[in-house]
Structures are given as structure tokens and as C-alpha cells.
Length: 256
Image 1: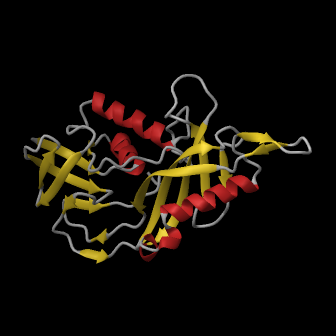
Image 2: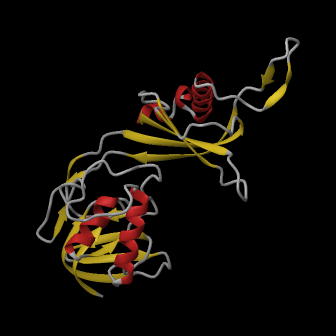
Image 3: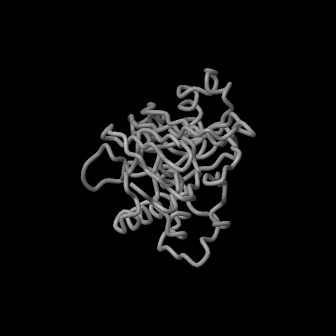
């Protein structure tokens, strides 16, 4: 397979760059934009009906795929760069040799390159904890912000565990942690649960009704949530030395 200009990456920045430069795109990871992230900066002359990053990402990838510019689909297992050739192993497991003129790498996940690393990525991570809400599913809030690194953002969304029309909400929280904190129980899923429950209680979110007190007031159970799964996303990137045919890009959406 021969391609002229290739973009390797999974971020919205990589996808937008491929789209705006008429490059082919190889998506090198199943990682996608967080579904509650919005674009906070302009996208130049490109206008979208939404500011949601995942929706924009999906729309652009679909257009690239329809144009035949996304030859390996949603993701590949690995990529090895050798000179002006890529050895791509798609999900099928059968290696494909791809010759190129220029290659632009945004994200190095699952990518092996001969280029020298000139600066290692920092050890900072965004930690996304998903919770099933057992009591305290019905309230007015869609988002709560604490301004703290640990459980700083709370997003409430219509529960996907319940079929049909309903108003029950589950919860996802966002934290920013260092590598050493990932192994510290004080920043574990259990502690994230306790903090999220406390924040919900402080904002007047109650559990289900448990009865009536002697003076006639309604008694409520406490909010109760349980961890579903934790997703850890590295924030830093290795910085590499460019070569003649391979360039490493770290551009913001507005710079693209």
C-alpha cells in the first residue's frame, strides 16, 4: 500500500489535522475523547452544530472513512515506523506494509519509532471514575464542580442501566492525579466514592424515602453509589526528534 501523507493519532487534534490537510488517518488506539468534554476554542473556518468533542470526532472520522482516508478503521494493534515505511498490524492481525512520503504523529500509543526521545512525558493522569447510583438518582443537577484535583468534576447523566423513559441519573467523576497517587488508597475508587457521596449530600441530593419521623417529616436514605469502572488517561506526551519524513506534532485545535 502506498499513501502520500499520513497522520497517526487518536485525539481530536489528530483527526482534525488529517481532515483539514486531506491526509490519510491511522487511528492507533481505542481511546476516544471523553464524552463530557466540550471544545473550548475555535476551530477556524470549520463550524459544527455541537461543541462536544466526541461528537465532532465521530463526525470527522465518518467523513474520512467515507472518503477512503481511514484505511484501517477504528483502530490498529500496533505500528512500527522504519524509514518511509509503516508496518501496521490491524485488528485482523495480518501485517500490512505502507509506504509514505510524509508521516505526522500526534499520539505515540502502540507506535514504535526509531526517533530519539528528547523529553519524557510527565507522570500526570486524568482519572475518570464511573459510578452506578443506587439511591439519589433523581435530582436537578447535571454537573457539579469542586475546583479540586481529586473528584473535581462530577457529571450526572441519564442511566443507561435502565430501559425506557425515566429520569434516573448515574454519575461519572474526573480527577487529576500524579503517578504515585494512582497507587495510594487515599485516591482510590473507594475514596472517590466517599467524596462524591459527600459532595452530593452537601448539594441537597437525597436518597429514596425511608419513612416519616414522629414529628411528621419525611426521612430519606443517604445517597449511595457504587464504583463501576475506572479509566486512567495519561496527559503527558513524549517529545521526539523529527526525521526527514516523520514529524511529531503537538498542536492545539486553534493552531490547526
